[in-house]
Image 1 (cartoon, rainbow, N blue to C red):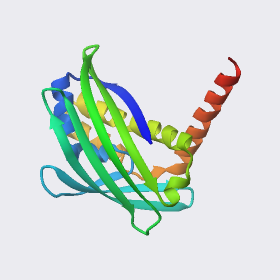
Image 2: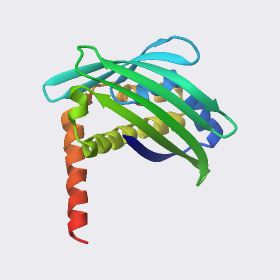
Image 3: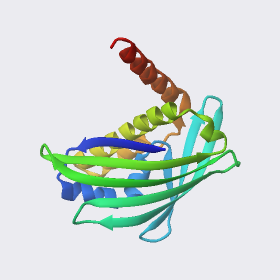
Length: 188
């Protein structure tokens, strides 16, 4: 399944590129994610915690930088995640591109996501809505890091994202977005 998201950050492309290429700084910006190990300059290990009501899931994830073109400001990461208790897995390629816009930078992210196991049983619309919520939180964290005047402010922005992703909260937000789309279609 292909997911496309865009957001703007309040920094010139050079600064935004430097932050996005610092994978150890951006992994913790993803809600529920923590960096476990920097294997080398192109490979990292992370854990992603997700809470779906009373069920907690923990995914061990291998992240690899596949491509990086600084001149074109395009990068490609791959991620392979396994739920630690064997309740599913996921793989993704994430392509990002940066373009100058309104004195800041527009970040476009295209994710090709494959899900397997129980996690794949969620509907496509729910996964898209939840991913939009996660990307929104990720973008907010990046914006706060880029706007931070001190390293302590940047660390506080990242710390906000470290708690597990609550499936109930995201699920309710996704349900709300689905209902809004349904009513918009019917009112046309």
